[in-house]
Image (tube, rainbow, N blue to C red; front, side, top):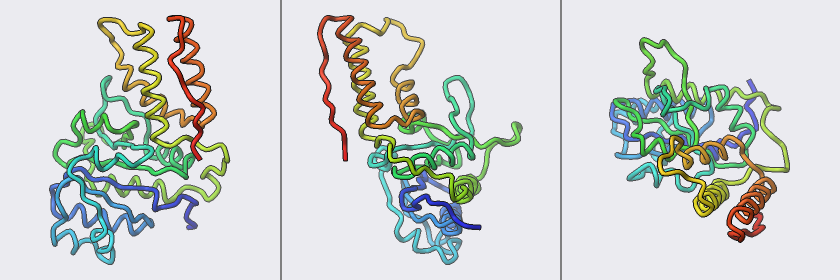
Amino acid sequence: MQNNRLDPTLIHFILVEPIYEGNVGAIARIMNNFGFVNLRIVGSIPSKNDFYLAMHSEHILSDAQVFDDLASAVEDLDRVIAFSRRLGKQKPIDLDPPAMASYIADIPHLKIGLVFGRETYGLTDEEAGLCELRCHIPANPTFPSINLAQAVAIAAWELYRLPIDQTSESTDMAAKGAELVKLHDYMLEVMTSSGFFRDHESTNWDVFLTRLLATMNPTQETIWRLRQMFNRWHVLVTGKGIGYERDFQE
């Protein structure tokens, strides 16, 4: 089977405090099976048993980056997707594994983080909040918890099996993560300054805008138009602009 055009060096598999011996080594082997090389670990360095299970993939463990916390592990990435088995009103799911792969195929020029939580209790709410989108692997509802290494295998396989012609070749590329953060903050600033928020909000607008922008994958032109629109809204409500610049990034 021919591999797709995704640059595997732009895909980062991030494990948050893995605790069981063998999972990390098995993940290194899985990553090597499908051509991925970037492993990030929040917490401790893998044990010797991990190296034993990483048959012919020890280089991935040796080169793994270790971080003190998830915030540090994702700060240089453009999009971050958390894998979660939890469902609920406060834990919305944006993607399943095939949709996750298709989403990444549309933005092949960006640095992507795939985050996997602890084997025992997954990600904390704060950690999940650092990830713009969530991916859920459907499973038996009476036993939905999938082994960490197996979850990584599903994600890696879905990316690897993308058809050769599915990755985007558009010259109108989606904006990088830093630009989405700037737009998100600008929109919140306009909403706050113009009196949009009520005393008791039923919607977490911060989270809503983060997920909206990540789902949209706006281009630089779209970002400019949104900033223009929000500034005009602020003028209509308050009588003055809040300022913006047309600062396209090369």
